[in-house]
Length: 241
Ligand SMILES: NC(=O)c1ccc[n+]([C@@H]2O[C@H](COP(=O)([O-])OP(=O)(O)OC[C@H]3O[C@@H](n4cnc5c(N)ncnc54)[C@H](OP(=O)(O)O)[C@@H]3O)[C@@H](O)[C@H]2O)c1
Image (tube, rainbow, N blue to C red; front, top):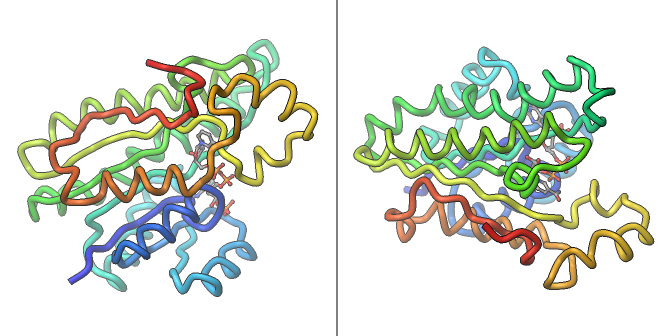
């Protein structure tokens, strides 16, 4: 029987590539999203992967959404915490709303999603948690005190939880992508991309969403059972840690 994988923010960008790669690897996949119904509909029509709408910043919504996914597909054995947002501002201009929105989605979202699936994974003695952090959680980024704090928090969360899950067959890992060619990054003016961003990347190009997806597929597999608490950097050499 194929395992069930749930990908938050799984209908667009990196998350969509992860959903498709997991499906191609033989998993039953559920893709969560927040509000872009049109993109979710198009994604399901194209891939056949069902989409489920809820906000990862709400614990109650996550518990209800996961219950629905489990009723339709079976117990979640692979959870990919990918949903994330930015609300950039220099710190002296950052509002409490910008701070709270990013912390509650990008950091508390990991608690809200992982907590409801954790006991089932412990009971079944198998689980895979893979979270998508960011290079900016490792090195910090001007204008992103909220985002960098949340993404650094994702790494600490992973290291702590990996220790709790290890004896129960649950691995917990985090991937830190650098600049990936999603809609968000491709929207940056070409001049800025070519003159300011790409020169900082030793491999000389943006990453592809599929390159992050392949890391997830590996971490989800039985082959990766000895890898837990790891931070995988996938940034074209931009920041080495
Ligand atoms: N792109 C990059 O270069 C890059 C680099 C490093 C790290 N990352 C991280 O990688 C992850 C994916 O980034 P991306 O560029 O692929 O983003 P994206 O294209 O903006 O897609 C984000 C996805 O997350 C969903 N989402 C946002 N807030 C949500 C919420 N509160 N509840 C449920 N779903 C929510 C969105 O749903 P809707 O479609 O409904 O809006 C969408 O499906 C993020 O965690 C991001 O921080 C990205």
